[in-house]
Every structure is written in structure tokens, then in C-alpha cells.
Length: 101
Image 1 (cartoon, rainbow, N blue to C red):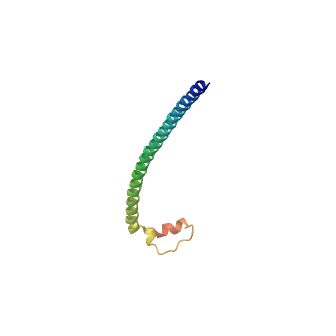
Image 2 (cartoon, rainbow, N blue to C red; image 1 turned 30 degrees about the vertical axis):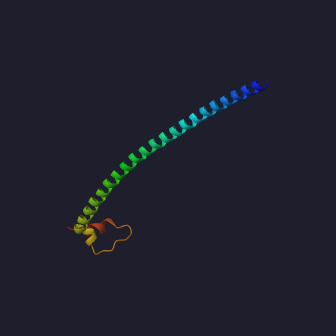
Image 3 (tube, rainbow, N blue to C red; image 1 turned 90 degrees about the vertical axis):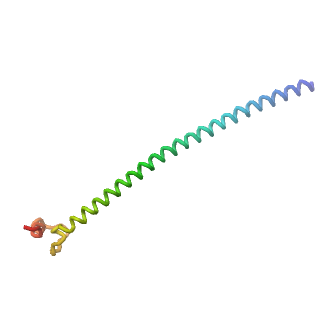
């Protein structure tokens, strides 16, 4: 009876080890998949970041250009040099009276 019980315990240990081994494999596979997914997300965010930085550069250049255009225009704009004070909604005839003839 002792030998039979020892053999049964050995079988249980073997089954438990095998079950544990399979669970460990599953756990490692799951960790690897999670790491892969995080890496893909990182790559995607890096690409988006690069694209946004490029867009910021373009918009900054456009803002500089438009600021220069505005500055040049302010020098010659008759409406800015008009001494008349405008009401909230200027009348069309008030605007034309300020323009050069």
C-alpha cells in the first residue's frame, strides 16, 4: 500500500509540475504580447509626435509670414491712419470717407 501511495504522490507532483509549466508559458506569452503591443503603441505615438512637430513648424512659419504681411499692410492702411473714431459697427460711408480718393 505504501508503494502505491508513493507512486500516486509522484503522479500528482508530475501533473502539478506540468500544469505549472504550462501556466508559466501562458504567462510569459501574455507578457510578451503586452510588451509587443506597448512597443507598437510607442512607435505610433512617436510618428504622431513627429508629424505634429512638423505641423507646428509649418504653422509657426505661416504665422511669421502673416505677421510680416500685417506689419507691411499697417504702414499703408488708410483706415489705421484715419483720425475718425469708429463706432462698434462702422457705417459704409464713414469707411469710404476715410479712404484716399
